[in-house]
Image (cartoon, rainbow, N blue to C red; front, side):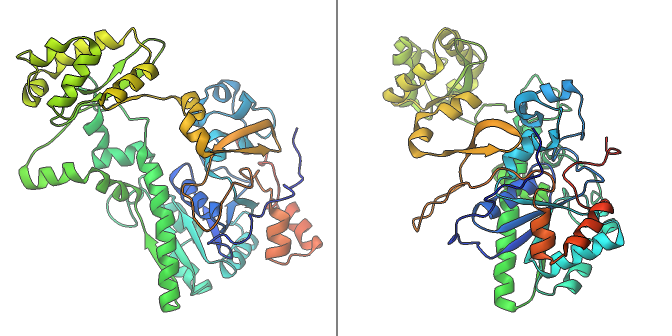
Length: 444
């Protein structure tokens, strides 16, 4: 059931290290929202600036009013409870995963009066993070030249896919495209795969989020030192390249190109993921030396395998890794992945069951540590579990305090308390198409 009542307790507990900072958020999809979430988790007042006149693609969903088939698909692009009838944009998976502890206000900054509101927010804030294609921000006027003139102490973090200059500047892109430019999909593709298949797992987005949060803190520290604001450019693609640094250096120094490694190691064998009993259940095994391989053979009940001429040392095993993987797979395919993981670990063999979402939520280690925390949402029935803050501080516990904000949920707070709008002026902006909790009917 939809409601226009704001959450009664949207503020964090006092004493968090970023308390007193106000950060504006014009981020989209994953990398940007994940970064601003880190700041919000630690006490910064993060205000998402949104519009009811247009929708940021794949941030609150691909469509304001999606067909049921889109609602049903699940995963990162799915919707809570597979319900797309009322305000589905508040139930989108990516948004709820990456926007907890934030506020949301709506304004159309393409209109002069909307830009004036944005200017006032810039004057009253410490910084802004955005990760849009540069041409879109330039059309809106969200540039360093303009914002620094409004607030000389402002910190602006810009995270376009490929940078603010160069031939790729205005490429509109997803995380898998950015990773393709860094070489990651080609590196980790399976040998039998076509390299033109786009990877669906994009660690560059998460890496970009952490990089963006760090960049904002560096900018704020620089402002503390100099008294002046700063603009920081952090291309998401470039941020990810150092994660592949060893391969890049190997080419730079030795001219070697590695490709389609899948789960294989450059010189360890066995080193792979093996099918186990059940539907889509897998186990990782990684033997780093002869001793660990001998222990694996003992657990397998195949001790003679360790003295087989094909596998008697690391170089032989690596050269015959395809045959070895086949032997191990024929052993694991009838066994339970978790039980086998414990057996191998107890014997001193590095192994780990590949966990799905349900496994991760039920993991006893995470449970004992209290890593997952429960949140409720005004438009989603029941409670749902959320990964907790990324790290812990000895000075005191930190816990999640608020669900991801509904579109425009904090309009009254931002307009009336932060900006000082009267009730009359607030009503005028609502009539002008700036303020609301629903996308305009014209938004697809």
